[in-house]
Amino acid sequence: MVWQTTKYRESLDWYLGHLGLIVSDFLYYPRQRERGPVMSFIRCDRGGTPADHHTLALTLGPANRYVHSAYQVADLDALAAGGEYLRELGYDRSWGIGRHIQGSQIFDYWRDPDGFLVEYFRDGDLFDHTLDPGWAPMTASGLAQWGPPATRDFLGVKPGSQALRELRAIVNALRQDNECDFERLRGLLKVATS
Image (tube, rainbow, N blue to C red):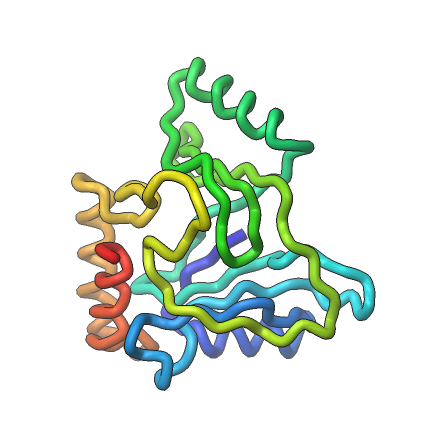
């Protein structure tokens, strides 16, 4: 599950402090590392027993909302066959097939009937509690080791009602008391074009 929040640090602290989750990776906007992370992939702390790279990912954004959920499949054949099945039913692939950098999952993103983003994945990293968090810049080109470039649909900048919703969220975020100041929002917009 990936959630966007206008109060990223407060949300991250809540999940770490109240649920005992631990960070696998932090992402920061290019040339803004000194301001701290804007996304984190967090996992269950199972001690010495390896756990999935992330159970939850949190990202700073102009509105509090669901971004996508992910569903693990048996193997690459199931992932590819599932994509063919969804295409035959008339659904739209948002992005994929490719392999993420953080977490290393082979992924395929689709839109469900309500327009929600869903990810099917396979072959993700497992870590125990000894892993120190990684740090990397957040860029569209840095989301995958291989596969097609991230689409405008996946990045939330597809023309139409989705883009208008994002623009309204940005304007509202600038009026609110949250972490989405002008520099952070400028960093977010740069990600979409990187």
